[in-house]
Amino acid sequence: MQNDEVLTLPLDYSAIERILPHRYPFLLVDRITEFETDTRIVGIKNLTINERYLSTTSEDGRPALPPTILTEIVAQIGAILILAKPENRGLLIFFRGIERVRYRGSVHAGDVLTVEARVKRLRPRMGVLEGRARVGRRLVAHGTMAFALGGREDAEA
Image (cartoon, rainbow, N blue to C red; front, side, top):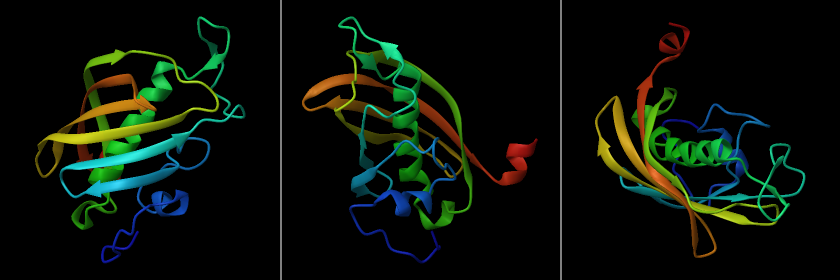
């Protein structure tokens, strides 16, 4: 994404690729539906039976999304909120940690996962986001994630 490019919602997969450095099969966000600079973002992940990471089975025997992948989806949507700012384009976002994450239910093939991330604290090179993941009206996960921003040289160090 160019520094002067304006975000037009909804952001589709190709627009998301211009913001995040992730690529298939590691890019886990399908669409961004809401975006408020420095405040909040809402993104969608449509789960299909073809997702290679749906290998964990839930109590009812159906393949379910592992909590680690669910956490990564929330983190990627939060990263889009931070990296879409013109002054952050071209930087990398580093996952620093999670706090108070709770998983409240399973996510299965056919589900539409809606994730909202809100800024709790934001500084020029670091911050904290609060994320909530839902399937319909059912809350399936929530927690707080810390991040830091840096250049490619920071990733090599």
